[in-house]
Image 1 (cartoon, one colour):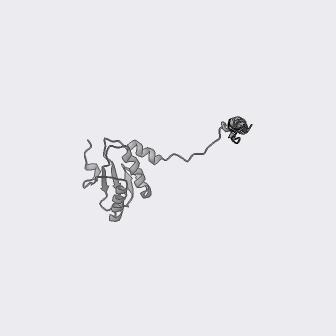
Image 2 (cartoon, helix red, strand yellow):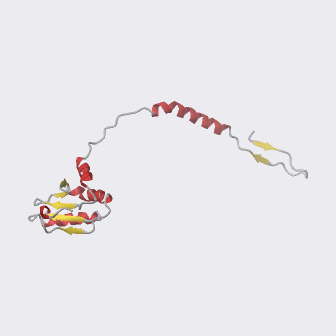
Length: 151
């Protein structure tokens, strides 16, 4: 029953309506949902093929060359092209790749090696992109990388 209509109290009070919760519709809905999920469970467990994009070889090379014990060197050649640890990196991806490499290192020190005939604007752009990647300090090398002894 949905309600209980009982007589009033001993002094002739008006009868009161006592509401009771009717759980029958709730049980019906839950049973219907249970049946739906039981029918759909085998359909959802089937596999399907997904075509993934090709693996980025530049990312893999950068991860392999990112040794925390060796310095991180950003080189700008005479044509204005950037490379990190001698791996060519497009200018629009430079900040993102530096952030990824700095996350795997204890410090954010970056060494900048620019060619003698490198365009000044390309070097300044590389410095700005490095600052956007939170590189600090940015050390500008004055000797060629071949002349720098390894530790």
